[in-house]
Length: 233
Image (tube, rainbow, N blue to C red; front, side, top):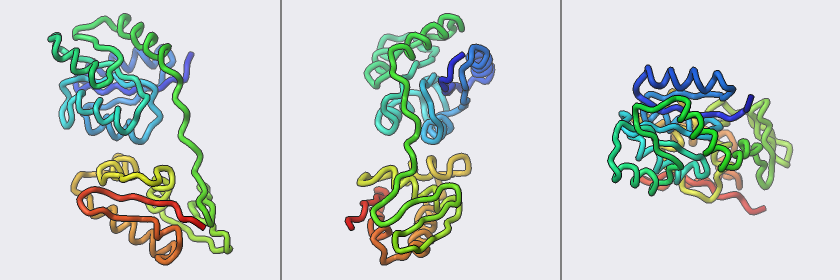
């Protein structure tokens, strides 16, 4: 048995189910997606060791998902699944970073062997890092509180806490609105919810103290995204 986790991103439910049955039957943990947006949501919120990506998915095709993976989730190996056999498509997938390419219809046993081979070549990914502290305070994840060195303790809502932690884990980087919606709000996120982020961030800053060194690090870059710079104390 193993503890590797596989994403199956395939819009054909029968193929997806057959793959899920085969993988779980040999000890893998499986996450399933029927379209590209769901695949990205899983990639952004779960620990994934390998992705099986159907090229012809709705919302975002396999090539687009692969390109975003390479930028935002580097190190996750991918095998492309497609009914296309054209050399140009295979080359495109490999150029985007795919580790292998399987043309439908394919043998489940052959695909399992390819998965094993790709994982053998790929180092096991580290688990999500612990919630970091920050200059001037610490985080208590069990109580969703921020504890400042001066003794002040601030309780946060679930999403306020998750948003703060995401910024703390990704300092000095511009984070797009879509990334925040998918990674922080997950399944409940909708593309039209862009106002959710500034509203939640405003509440977070108010609770933490708008004049504190921690909250002064937040920056909203209109039309681009958000960033957080750690305070220097």
